[in-house]
Figure 1 (cartoon, rainbow, N blue to C red):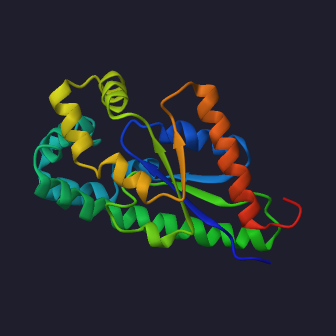
Figure 2 (cartoon, helix red, strand yellow):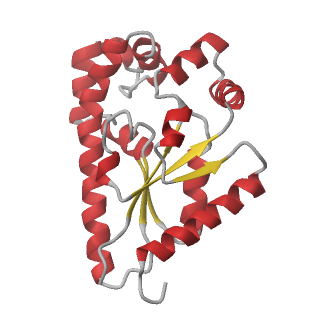
Length: 212
């Protein structure tokens, strides 16, 4: 049996990655969301949250002891060093979970699991240098002005704050140039979904699963 095809989905903040991930999942792909893993890494009672509090203080906690993401966000998006410190806490936990997912998917494949390939949504894939962990990279992209508008609408941010969060990542054009496949989310939902299906069919063919 061929080795499982490992696919990463990435892009910029508010470029439509989550929609694409759901669309791939609806087509039967085994998926994982690194953003979900990052939230789980700092849930109450975890070593991750304890490390965050040790670094940033109890001001980043809500009264119920959960992480105040807005308060932490204000710190790390205004201070590159603080952001790197946060990433040094969270990223190792996230990537270990991704590695475990890959190993589990391989075991499922040996038992004739029908997902044509595995796909992990990793927003900071290129920034963290983990693109080489995957066989193919899919980038979700849209126009910069559209990205800014979507982020402001989604998170209720002012223009300056939204721009800082976008600029904390690699420019989307750089990611597009490094992609194996690009899904342009600038158009309608139907057009985005059509592209997802096209990429799915190409990746399924590359995965070479008998009967897929």
